[in-house]
Image (cartoon, rainbow, N blue to C red):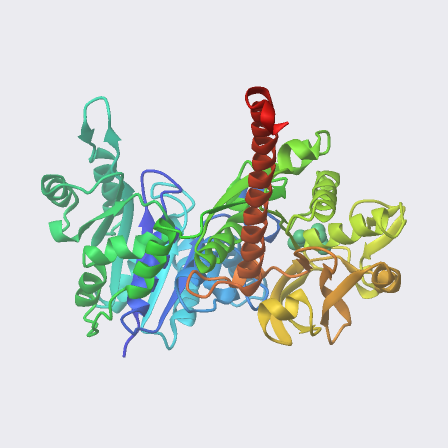
Length: 562
Ligand code: GLN
């Protein structure tokens, strides 16, 4: 079967959900038995998002093969069964780098190197390479139509349809149809203008996904259809949803998958979306109440920085039939506040990955609080490193314990490995991608995974210093996961605690709603147990007060009770 291509662009505003829409369409097509892949084209000139500021760019998603990619790839993996690779994420920076390197090597034989055809050819080549052997390749074009920098990508996909024909390539455009409260109307003009912009450069969308807060009435769809030169039945409502896992259902109800398949002449049958319906109903009516998890980090103003972590917590919540409320706690502010005011009463505390020394003392404070107050604690990457520092300082008496990342002096319980010290260039010395980990029996890790060997994704530079393993073990730390090849600590936990588990890797990248990650399932379970215990204690306290008061009342009015 010939590979079919779906190009997804966006207009009017950024962040209206192109990534999720693409991921949801991937889920729909996969559910019809099609072999799919998804790609993201980012128009910025950075070569990869690895060194981009999380405040500007959100999370860096790490693939199995160790590529640092855009967070939309996380959505693609969560919504489908595919494992993406480095080549599924393309930035303009990479494309230009390749073309300029070819020019330097003389591969263009002295010809003039131009955006068309050299940059556009390189873009088309990259898409074809990823699509090889797949039934459908969905390509999301980052940015908003009308931006100067996305033009080479749009031109490349225009050529793509011309090269491969209409039956093999479709264009889907996501726009916004706002409801103006003042006039009580849905406004279609931004959509009209955005489609006009696309048509100016030779792209006629086949489908429009209209982001709105309500179902579009037929007359609005007809109006959009007329002005945008699109069949009314292909104007789809992308209605706001209460949770992102409803998006495939919203599209399915409007027959989007059927329409796409017909348009691309793909003969497949829908097998229904039971899997997604189950997830949505589990989220809508959690049987076991609510847990509140505190996420202590420094990017709390842009929670997109913790996208995979927050989604993995939702997956853990689905598995435990609870609702998870996330409380983002600024680690820097925590440094100068009483932790009780921020952390008391939480069902569980999580310290996610992070870089640099800003706010680390606040995170250490939170970890100490979780350890001493017996609140379930889940530490990820820096959350493991800081747990070691906290334990070394407060339990082992190594008061100067620190990481080489934060200071030039002290006891480096977290350090660079010998051969890393020579690699100075930022981005060059990271442990990235999947590594094996052996799990010790009879530990929380073994209990959670039910396996004795696992493989998880990494993104960090520093490691637990093996010189300190002996003293830490003697003081009660359990190293429950070890990388067998390099003898590096991957997981550690505390025995005398309801649930205190940390890992050097990032388990959040492998969690999916229908395959929740075992560590997140176990953590949410522990948090639920803690909440139930807290409630029980409160009830006990109340009943004590009531009994005391009752006795006083009885003594006053019924002297015979004295
Ligand atoms: N900054 C730490 C390191 O480089 C931890 C990184 C992380 O949390 N992802 O090792």
